[in-house]
Image (tube, rainbow, N blue to C red; front, side):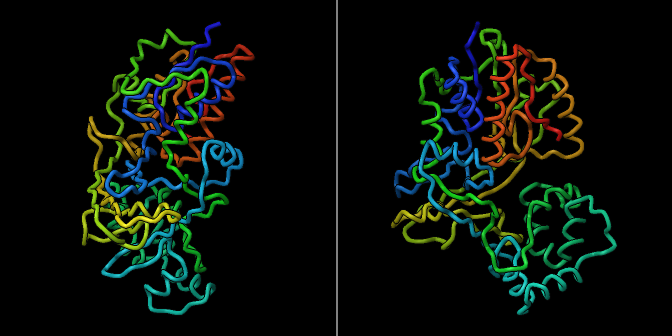
Length: 384
């Protein structure tokens, strides 16, 4: 029996699957086109300041999934971290997500929770019964003033299109709170790895039976050399973009190094047009247990992803769904290939979901191997 497995991509999807299958006795080869593991979660010490920098932008771990939390803690220490995002709009600083403090500051009020809830309900556009677009959703539930201050311009900068062109589901992920809780996330487990994400992924890939090839692309023509292939790269790239390039947003970063504390917080969003960047992230504040005299800040700019750029966010508009469906249909006809991760399934995934789905993919493969049934092209329906 051929027990050789190929995994394309050394991010969390690939590393988790590699670790699980190597434990089960398979020989795993991981192919990574970059010079490092951990994908867009790659972190490293800045040479000038010794600050732990999230090279491709910040990643904060948060989950309610017990299995995922226990699994990832097996590879490194996680320290408590609460993401408290600030937002600048019209030369004023507010707290995000919108909470009781934001509402009271913005409108110059001293509302109690029930009063704020009633007030916000009075601002919503009740003529919008079934919100379809991002703009509909915002106007229906927070009203025009908060929408224009915090969401409209920021969305244009982030996505390169008007909120009236985006689905309402994007805004459904942004809560409004009627208390003073300024924790950006509401999950049971939240934290940062004490020594960065790259060390964690390196430990996942350090077991017996795993060989990692950095700076190495994988040719789909090589798939016949392996019992199975797990592919976490862009699904359209696997098929030579035969149905065209799926659209992504990418990020550019301007890096500032200086002494002291630049902004006093890890993340500050810029929600109006006073600046072209969407946010500034100050990386030493992601490791509050450390002390650094210097600081490293990333000024973040979003734009359309071109052919040689690093893809970050799948856009997934209605027109893209039709294109994606063509790729999914082609993928179903592949043999011994499973598509995983954000790029392989063309979905925006948080780290904990990525790890959960990778664990399930490994479970499914072992189940299929035991029962001698074919492994599916997708463990999770990308259109679901």
